[in-house]
Length: 356
Image 1 (cartoon, rainbow, N blue to C red):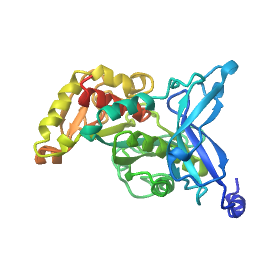
Image 2 (image 1 turned 90 degrees about the vertical axis):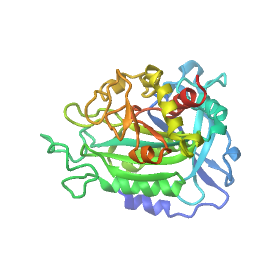
Image 3 (image 1 turned 45 degrees about the horizontal axis):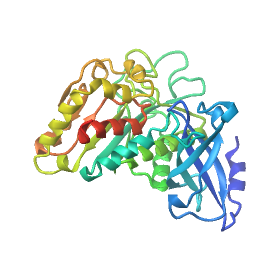
Image 4 (image 1 turned 180 degrees about the vertical axis):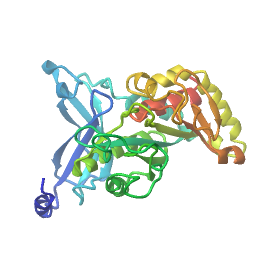
């Protein structure tokens, strides 16, 4: 497509009393996002100003064709970095015809847990890894009939022979900042064509809302470049790193003096719920993570729980600085790159804060 032609139309003046609101939601796969746009005759100030909407759930694996109306309830609103002006991106929850949550609406129960633990001031940061692919499904920039050199020079690399498609990363970073998402950094990852962005720290439900919208922005930005984003936890078999969504977590007590005691208590609780967490940390109850959590390539074994200071081969890592300062946070390295952050953060809250 010729973007110059598009820009002619995007520069047409927009009526002051009309905006475009793009509603975004998670479909029945629990991994993919869908979106559609409506015109609003006002500029919303809060998400509560936004009307609910509906869509054909039979086309998103969320209902049968004979009873297909599925409902969208707005839960978060962001500035639209593509249409600019007063236009909005709207993250939505999905509900069935009977107004009960759809099977992949994990936000509903996550919000209940977050409210129950609100007094403990839970903070989260998520490190979202992803891989860029060409339209043939090959990692972007890789030789058509071979492989790049072994891993080593690519992590945080600089140079055209070490990193690929930095333009997408830079465009996505700026789009997140414009939208109002709390993006805290980016870096090239260990496998060439693999990147990472970090969101947080955010309190409570906001971390998962922002991860999902940041994912949407990433897919949407890459679409402009004709590149595909995959969150597959192990896109390339062999001696290549997989992709995770490491989750950093702390409570107010962990961040205060001698908080290391609370961190160690939390790790003990996590050790007793390893299987439960593995089942929550990818959309297929551990089957995706089986390919990634092998004990190699900076991962722990999916079968065993482990913890350690500065150990990237452990299930849970305590950063060196936190061990020295005796307060801070823990890093759960088990979540897969295609995890549902609502399911991940809910599992952490229920195990650590609510003792469930």
